Length: 382
Image 1 (cartoon, helix red, strand yellow):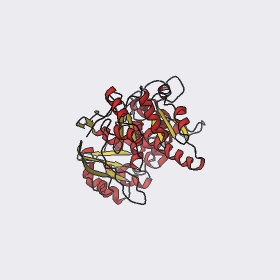
Image 2 (cartoon, rainbow, N blue to C red; image 1 turned 90 degrees about the vertical axis):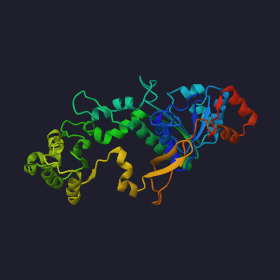
Image 3 (spheres, one colour; image 1 turned 30 degrees about the vertical axis):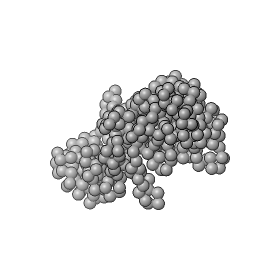
Image 4 (cartoon, one colour; image 1 turned 180 degrees about the vertical axis):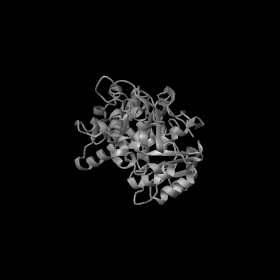
């Protein structure tokens, strides 16, 4: 649901023309999900701005014909139907690539195209469970926790973008497109593996077990807020421990080396998570910055727009659209030639561009009206 929407919006932010194909009755299920205005949520907008919408019934011959014709002119087709669904519709990889040998056909699935779970439905949190994220978040045995963001959808979305770019680059040499399968499960295992599964990477019995790198870094919470600290070296701890109120720990074997700290993180974290000195965020940052220890304040989400560093890099942009009013979104994070870009565009109404898209394909006005009257095509005007 989110994966393909975010992937293609990212492509749109980098200059691609994106046509979103939606069902005619309710469209993308993301449209009303969450904080919304005029029936469209900020969630939907954040994954679909800059696109055009074609709302057409893919179970109709006209709907299949329209998508086939669009694909014959396209560089990339992305979908996240379960394996086999597009084939049944007549829009499978072979059908599309027979008409356009240069197209990059990307099929996104939850669990992959093989195995006992291949045809099961999958959402972000299902994949969090199976890829180990819920275990990584756990502090106790059998106390699994979700990461409170759609991390698996987003990781897979960026994997889709990278794959599409690589395939388009390969096409410059071969003059041929290709079929690409990407499962959320595989993408998220690859994302989590470098640090979260380092203890299962080395297989020999003489390996030395250590906590994941993510366990090594903590937040320090004070009465007036929190500080995110990434203390790594022995020198960092010589400053950090006295700041926390534990000067007697400096030089103790438990804290004397990275290896010792990483093999005893539960004990180390007792000090990090229980500062004796409530010196406050400002004083803590002053001490940490003076010692060149990586750190930042823990910013509440409602305060992100006020942060001076976030303003300085131009990470957010605010603009006005007719349907959704005033909006704040992230600007594209990639600065080509050092220049900020903008993606301050509206997200499409359901079926908003259907008439112009079919007209561009050469469909007659009479045919378009026939589809509207039959309910095959939905047109929504601003």
